[in-house]
Structures are given as C-alpha cells and as structure tokens.
Image 1 (cartoon, rainbow, N blue to C red):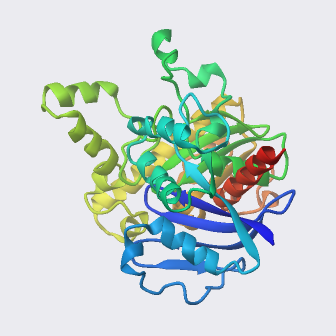
Image 2 (cartoon, rainbow, N blue to C red):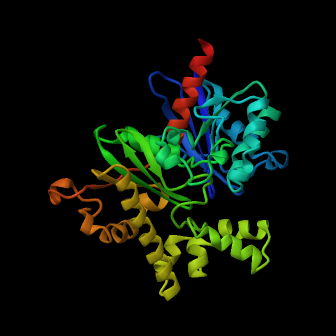
Image 3 (spheres, rainbow, N blue to C red):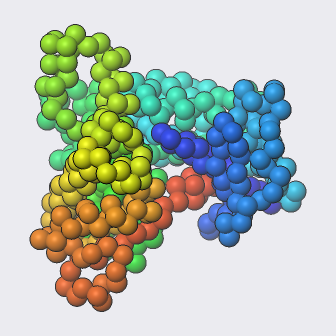
Length: 379
C-alpha cells in the first residue's frame, strides 16, 4: 500500500487539514478540508465535496477532535496507510530551525515557547498531544512558521537592545514562514526582489530576495507588525508602561487587549471581519479599513527598502487572496512607487511593478517537509 501523510494546520481562527500521498519528489494531494466544533468538511483535489463526512460525532470523540479527524481520514484511505502527521507549529524559538520528528523532549521544549505565542502555540500542540495519547506509534513532524526566516541578516533579526538579551534567544523570528516558503516556490523567477503580503486574521509581510527571507514584519511574537483582525500590530512600547502605571492594568489584561480587542475590531468597535466592515456605512468601519490598508502600504515600503528595490508585490492569505477591494486600496497608496493596479498583467502597465495574487498552500509545504523527515529517518 502507498503511504499517506496527514497535515494539520491550526491558525488563529481556523483548522485546516489535508492528506497527501507520499510520492517523490513531491507529495500528491488526495483530499483536504476544514474542521470546527460543528462539522468536518472534506473536498477532493478538484474542490468537490466528499460525502458522509459531516455526521454528528460520537460522544467519546467530541472531546478528542484530533482522533475524530484521524478516524475520518483513515476511513477515506482504503489503498493507503497513514505514515505520519505533519503539524504547523507557529514558534520554533532558538532551538528549532528545521522540521523535526516530535518526541516527548521536543514537545516539552515547544510547550515552553507558549509565552512567545500564547494565541497559537497551545492550539498547535494540542492535536500532537491527542495523537500521542491515542496513536503513539504514528510518527509526528513539527514544521515551523519561524524556520523560513531563520537566516535573516543580523541587521533585521537583532533587536536594538543589549546583546545579553539576544544570547537568551530574544530576537526577531518572524512567522507565516510556511506560507512565504510556498509563495517563493511559485514565483516565475528566482532572481526577484518580492514583497509578499500574507493577509488574514493574522497578517504579516516578508521581503524575499532570490527566494530567501531578508526581513519580515512580525518579530519575537506574532503580535508585532501590521494591524490585524484583533491584534494591534506594532505600537509604542511606552504605551505598555503607561497602561501598567497609569491604568493599573495587569499583564493578563494588556495581553487580552493587544491580542483580542485591538486591530480592526478595536478601531471599528464593530467587527474583526473585513467583509463586515466593507459592507458597513459606519465611519468607524471606514476608518478601520483605511488604517489597515495604510499600515500595510507603509510596510511594503519598509520591506522593499531591505532589498534596495522591488520587482513583484504578491498578495496571499484569506483577505489577500479573496478581497480585491483591499488589494486595490493598498496599491492605490503606492502608485508613486510604481506599483501597478492589482490583478492585471504586466503588459497592461509596462515599466511598473506587477502585482500578483497567489493562493498559498501551507499544507503542501508541511507535507513536503514531513515526507523529507521520514525519508531521512529511513536512511
């Protein structure tokens, strides 16, 4: 029987998964889907729904969504054996710069990084724990969002702090690396200076020069950078001191504010969903959208500066891929830079910087890395 790989991609607002046949040189998609508290939805590679996967789960499975997912997946693999589960792990910290087979020690070290990604790391690690408990013989591989940025120049990965802190692992790591790695593979040429804007519930930008990460907007944590759905992005660090001293806010209260009550939701007071805000006539909704687009446009310039120029601008992620109005708004702020209107061919605007929309596929990168880790283990 052919071997298959399950990929589990838990983001800040979604759970995506896919199953690939482990076929060299690249994994081949068998099916993919989404899972939440209400339903498990699976599509074939052509996007056609696979039936009989939305039945109500048995009571004993409701408390173990990873086992529910695994059981449903294996029921759809009559000619394959599941060889491994590959996981998107948001933070690899200073100790993990490449995909790794997970054991008890690795799991403990990743768990210790939770303070650096409190919104993401526990959710990423929960299915790992569940599968260890229920399927201890199933190989599990951690694929890190921070790994793609690991070789950024010191100019961009070092904080302007005393070097003693860098020795403790306090540095700019960057995130969304699996997405940026996929986009780098999809570019038409390698010798390009590209800014990729991954826009979704979480948002970050990356400067990619000749296929390598040079700079990115997120840093030590996924809280830094541009304004997001509910996260503030970069703010004056003195504000945090003020909130503690003048407002007597605790660390937990400040964390809740910055992660859950800021960004689009905080500015608009209406919603964190960009679609809701675009449909609203409320001035606060319009202000939130304008601020969101302005911050992204600013950071496109910052990323281009890190490469001494720009050859392509790429949008990806849920908002970046599906919302033409946001792409147009951002690009209109950059006409002076030579940015062409989005989603039109380079021939339409000769001499201007092309703007592309490329759907990301983090699951493919997870499957590819998992397949390679298994191959290395077998050698």
